[in-house]
Image (cartoon, rainbow, N blue to C red; front, side, top):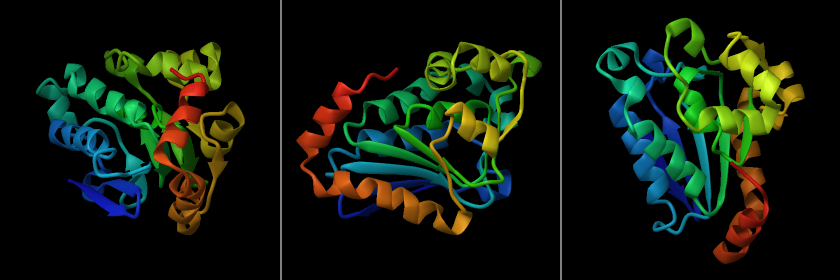
Length: 206
C-alpha cells in the first residue's frame, strides 16, 4: 500500500491507499521505514514523500489502532528513518495531514502543501499520546504555544495558517506539487552525496 519509485538519485515514496484516505497500517509504516532506510543504499540523494488521491493521510487506520498500532514502535522506526536520511527530504502534502501522519511529515526537511489542505492532530480528544518525537519537532517549527494549540486544544488549521505558522514552507497547486518538490531537490541531486549530507548536519534540527 505504498509505492516506491527511483529516478536518477531521487526516491519518491507514495502512500497508495486512496480509498481509505491513505490511513496508515503497521505494514505501511514498516514499508515507509524500509524505503527510507534503503534510500541511501539505492544511491538516492533526495527523497519525496507524498500521497495518492486528495488526502495526504488521515492518520492511523482505526482498526489497526484497536489492534495496538497507536503505541507500536514502528512509528518511531519510520520517523527515525526519514530523519536519518542524509539527503534532502520533502513532504509533498497533496491534501489533509491528520493525526499520526504528522510523524511522517515532521521529520522531513521541507513540507509543501496544496491550498486546500487541513492540519489537525486529535490526540487529546481520542485519549492517545502523540508519537514521542512529534511534540518537539512540531514546537521547533511553529513554537511551543502553537504546538499546544494543535496537540492540546485540538485546533484544526488550514493551509494559509499552516504557512504563516511555519508548518509548511510553500503552498502549491495540486498539479504543480510534485514538479515543485522535484525542483527543490534538483540542487541536491546535482551535488555530491557527501556535500549535501555535510550541509544538512550543519543545520540544527530535532
